Amino acid sequence: MMYNSKITGLGYYVPENVVTNNDLKQWMDTSDEWVQERTGIKERRWIDPATGDNTSSMGVKAARIAIDRAGLTKEDIDFIIFATLSPDMYFPGGGVRVQDMLDMPTVGALDVRNQCSGFIYSLSVADQFIKTGMYKNILVIGSENHSGGLERSTRGRGVTVIFGDGAGAAVLSRSSEKGKGILSSHLHSEGKYARELMLDGPATGRWVPEILAENNPDDVSYYPYMNGQFVFKHAVVRFSEAIIEGLQANGLQKEDIDMLIPHQANLRISQFIQKKFQLSDDCVYNNIMRYGNTTAASVIIALTEAWEEGKIHDGDLVVLAAFGSGFTWGSVIIRW
Ligand code: UT7
Image (tube, rainbow, N blue to C red):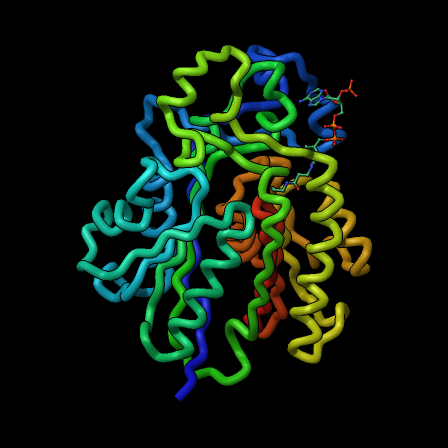
């Protein structure tokens, strides 16, 4: 027997500490005009270390809200899926930390390493577990602490100004409502472009002693690297493909989209997609202006905000789409 899965709870958490584009000038040569014009970002949240926030704890804060809104308790959750590129530790991942911090029973916890499309991949995995009947309620979290690992200097500005911290969570539950919930998900990758958006080391391909032995002051391999224009060009193509694929799989047209939640990588990418699919402003949700790019957290924070603002209604067709490092990309089509 196949079950349906639907989102029953949503929550998000962002650190209180607001960093405006002008604030960035204390570390690097940049300007509010440059950042807004190229990315649409006005400000982002960066963890204030004094608060003790980290990737897992932000995920926990978002998760508590989502579980509560689902009308469930932590005992009802059968499985945890945690997406991040910025775990608190090299291993283990954030999922087990959430299990511990929420004092949950010994349910399984899986970490997903798919960067900007991490939440899309996670939701798809959760959907399969529910549709086969293995689990009833799955906690799916996307969380990132970027600020802890960004290069705060003019050398790093091309990457550093874009990224922000935050977390979002969803509870995906078994449902008997036919034709509602997650209709389909579509996942892709193209690993030949792994080095176009990456953090090289420390990792086993380049471990700490090697980095230390080189003693190279110009070594920036432990900061994220992005070939910005190359990534941008691929993003606009792959976003479109993933959305079209999702619509076609369900016999739907672009006119059927009630709400598109694109990964918040760059406002220009979202605007390009909006124009291409001829969507009105109330059919696309963007919050990159306030949070920057929060990678695995971006789609779920945006979905939660759109829902909180009453922009998603019963029966709406909601499309989630993301593209990022790997390259990996994908879409999830939901009948709300
Ligand atoms: O989330 C995962 C997927 N990521 C994406 O989809 C990101 C896709 N890429 C982008 O969004 C854009 O490529 C960026 C926003 C990252 C960069 O914008 P761009 O228009 O591609 O700028 P650029 O990197 O080509 O740099 C243009 C100029 C350079 O100066 P010159 O060489 O023309 O003199 C940079 O040094 O802008 C300079 N620049 C900056 N200036 C002020 C780069 N970063 C900054 C900065 N402030 N923060």
